Image (cartoon, rainbow, N blue to C red):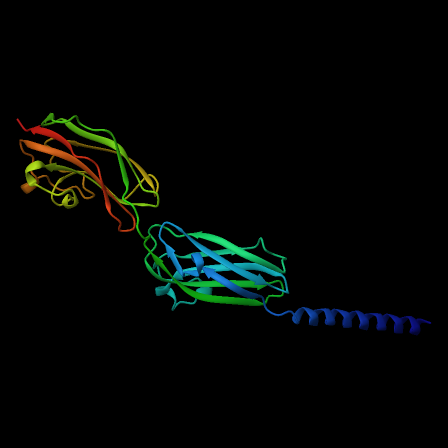
Length: 286
């Protein structure tokens, strides 16, 4: 009787092992995930724009059920590195993210929009899109796309809240002040406020930190798309407010003369400058 029971237990054990192995074999029979209809950029343009988002869309089928989806983006200059090790040059914009919310699904439509920074380096980028199933099988798709400046961007909008009155007279030791806001719907790139002597006969486009007294010069903003400014300078000051303050001497030395204040700003993409009106004042040094 004991031998018969032992024989029965052995048969059950062997059958269980057979079922386990069969199941394991069945798991191994699942094909690797399939990625199809991958789109990068709107209408699969393979182009992304600074300060905007990159459209990504793909169909995924994973008979072994999805475990995770991984996306890595790096500048083409880093492509000689092993992207799986995460070792890249400090070169351009990089993106690396893992999605686990699709875990357990047999199929899904992957649709995401990835923000491209306004200061992302222009040029070619490499795209690694990977799906790993619950059996550990991996499918990866690689592609190239380009980051460009936006096309047909508008000039920033400048709003002046307070400025000297027309023809206001300032004497040595008094402060000249202007305040306001500058905005751009996609991203600000730079801003300059100059105190310009009328007899310099400068076009607005030519006003810059080298040829005028700088009230404000910045590329740092409250937010990528909006900045509130207040710029002040004392008449007779030795240095101005350039990023690196420069001496007020030579061709831009203080004079008894008619001046005007000009605010100018550009977007982050090389688009046209926006300009304020000219705010005329008189400076008396005595």
